[in-house]
Image (tube, rainbow, N blue to C red; front, top):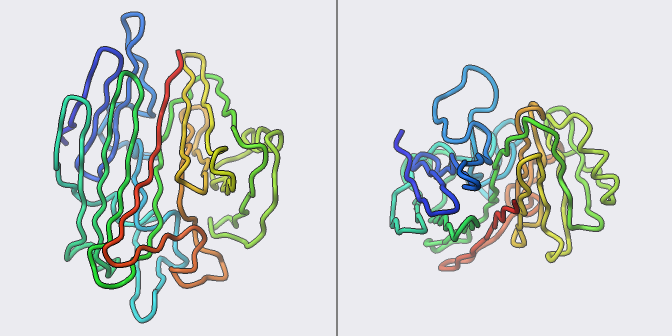
Length: 289
């Protein structure tokens, strides 16, 4: 698969049109490159384990109960978690020296699963070593559009690491083994968050951060610190199959279904766009050497 590259003196990124996925993000320092993502730059499919690098989650985050949901008389069906954008071919709209703009429009294939019109634009912009990702959702139809949106980057661990939250408290949403929400919620502190990180993360830790100004964490390993700013996203997911290899730090607007399922438009965090409306969500990655 062809990887579109943007590079400057301080950093380098690689993006796939398939899934609109960032597959490489490397920082240049002292004559070497520091890869930040799990399997950074490797687009082969591993025999086992997580197969992605920084998955785009749209038009839902997480899973639907029994893979199905509905809005009114329209049924929604997703074969995989996190919707359909991850398995669609995006169009390259523009590539400059410091940015890549991709687009996914609803089509016959997407409407088999999500019977609504949409436009999803993703723009990756690299300024020095700072990567800013813009997700723009547009409703081109004459009916309301309901959607969830998220980003699922997995960062290399391979050494000791920590995640330092900006928030003072957050609301934790609990899940069953199935990954569906139990309906139980609890306010946790930064100290409790640090304890949670030491536990099994094979079922995502889901946090809702009410204060927009506190939607930031710093990820640290023995090579680099990385600020992750996600002020436009209400939720944060933390997940890993193997913390010795990677940790996913995921800005979400939306969550998995409740076990006691609601309609799609009533899922936590779902965004509603009226006809002709659009909304932009931004995530910024800021390396500190």
